[in-house]
Amino acid sequence: MGLKQFNYNLRRFVNQIKPNVMEGGKFHAFRSLFEGFETFLFVPNETSKAGGVNIHDSFDSKRLMILVVIALVPAMLFGMYNIGYQNMALGASMGVAAKYTGFWATFAYGLLAYLPNFILAYVTGLAIEFTVAQWKGEEIHEGFLVTGFIIPLIIPITTPWWIVILATAFAVIFAKEIFGGTGMNIFNVALITRAFIFFAYPSVISGDSVWVLDHTIFGLGCNLPDGATCATPLGEAAVTGATAFDWNMVWGFIPGSVGETSIIAIALGALLLIGTGISSWKTTLSIFAGGALMAFIFNKTGDTQNAVAMMPWYQHLVLGGFAFGAVFMATDPVTSARTETGKWIYGFLIGVVAIIIRVANPGYPEGMMLAILLMNLFAPLIDYCVYQTNISRRAKRIAKK
Amino acid sequence: MSLFSKKNKEVFTAPLGKNNPVTVQVLGICSALAVTAQLKPAIVMGLSVTIIVALSNLVISLLRNTIPNRVRIIIQLVVVAALVTIVSEVLKAFAYDVSVQLSVYIGLIITNCILMGRLEAFAMSNGPWESLLDGLGNGLGYAKILVIVAFLRELFGSGCLFGYRVIPQWCYDHGYLDNGLMLMPPMALIIVGCIIWWQRAHNKDLQEQ
Image (cartoon, rainbow over all chains, first blue to last red; front, side, top):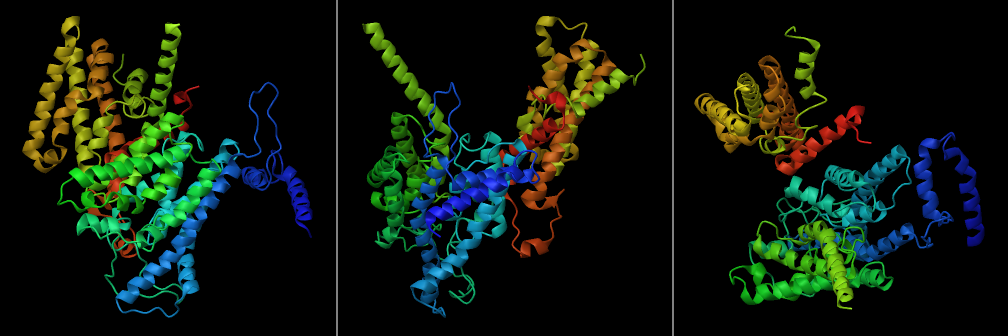
């Protein structure tokens, strides 16, 4: 059966079950679920109503979201490998050897550890989305496709399962559905999930003992002795002093939240996102510029006793969630500034604020999450100012004539 | 007119439900967020406000025909301030630890919008008995929301009720953790928001078009 034949049969099958789930059909309770999958499989062929001025591009938001997901895949795959690598590396340093070693055993360990978080985040979020869509009689919003993919990437691998569910549910309900669903939210939903965990259960997302799994999974990996801890480089800098720059910080072989460690994997995603024009290069570039500048200023003028302030500026940019946030979170088209000038300001301030939080507040070794959430709040104001400046400039130009 | 006529009953019960000062009029939110981390201070706060609203309503209602219109706010404030001072002193004398927990919020009852709102909107134009009922109703309506919020916050925030542990140790041994966000004021605001949501969803009269 060729691909074309398969495609034809699939379309026929979808068309056959369609009457059953539409209003009045036997299974109308599954209407939103059906529509969700139908539009996922096939580009909808509806056109604008007469009188409308909009043109439907076949590249709709579902196609856009799936590209973002593809861009996230390198970071996820590397994150899985790193989960296994960190467990075995810490084991080796404490004299515990894993039964199976090698690339595939390491990767399989990470995959098994990662999968539950991934499934839980998706099931929780989609269940809420589908229920709300069915209840309100709307189409399901596809925004959770990306959110659900990001959530397990920005939390430590040791996060308890029930906290993943609770935090995802909280974020989807209170950061998204309350504001009216996809495209209406003020804050980045995935970041609200992380912020919820950060404020509600600080012990599972900060400190030294949450970044590396300490037990075997189906015989893979190794059981670490009690009290085996491993700090992230940023956490270490805040407590005991910064470690020198190391290329592993770029490759990603350091402890941290699952997807944030490898700059190389994130850069691959960035290439795809920026190359296809989905995310704005202006936002990403200005975040790095703002972060570099602020870190450089701290390097030159900061308190020499403060190890984080003295950390070289390039090291600030590769550690923690800075790069991940700059590429995947801050560029979220819904919550970022929309005007082109606004994107420069918005991004630059995210970079600056993130470094200020890292340096000035020893309680929060990672500032990227709070910086992005803060600037999400200011994005509409930035846009407003840009519009107003433009309007008054043009008004002046007319007055001159 | 009888003391418990239908109208008087309505005056007392409306603030408990359909015309709740916190969830419908959205007054007194500040203290509702500040004192509800635990049940005990929330109850004391709710009772204090009830007593003060009821008595100040009564006093102002008795004086209402002699108060010159131009200085009425000052006179209302003097009455409220006197009552707040009395309540504050009583708490310091008989429930010192609670009064320390509530700190400035007892003194700040003076600025609670519910008080001035009821005095202006009701006591200035109604008889003493109705005013007393209205004050009691509004105070208890406020206390009711405080207790609900404090119950949820103390239960999920510290696993306790009235300071006694109610979530069994077994849960903690199996990985349950107290929710630190519950102890912070933002979560109180979200809970109040949820109560408003629930109330509006169940009450057609409160829904906007």
